[in-house]
Image: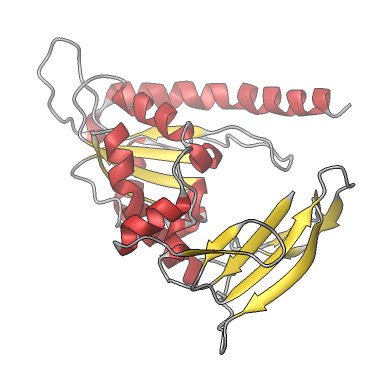
Length: 275
């Protein structure tokens, strides 16, 4: 299988290569952002096309029948080392570059680093796409403490009961948002960019909800924290006082009772698969 990797070029490529919804072409998005089509040229050793203004081109191939080889460990944007894992082997057939080419690089480590701010810009870039699917969404923020996708704050205009659950299932079904561990849904009057504001809303009603995670790598549950106001069917919607919401406190208690069984079932399933 032929493979070509291009490095650097137009700065817009940094955002156009972010995780996109299925069926959305990266070069199409790049052309839209730069308001001009991306000029492509054919590679030297395969028939793939790459941007004409790229600084480096690495051409090669991957043999799907070849055994996988371990890659890693290496430093990741989480601030930890990624453990070795088996990956396909990339055989290089050619490397070309422009005159006075610049090799792109960024410093990764314990957030916030450079990539955190690039990720924040990507969220704002794709927010209109989220709103096309979920018009009630006002804003989305991925705080540094969640290392990009692990923690998501979402503010919505609440108009009917269970609306936060719709947002939860919708976001967890969109591309790499499936990897989000915690989604916190708040009302539209909460500034999700101020990471203390959603935390303050949680503090008003949650008293140690427990842990919804497994000690086994790569396995565990997910948690939705609904801080948006409740709406009663047949009654005009009005925002309620978080601190006096007995229904939400009851839900928190139910969640606390359910967490041990969720964690136990997750670990039992893992042990069954890996016998």
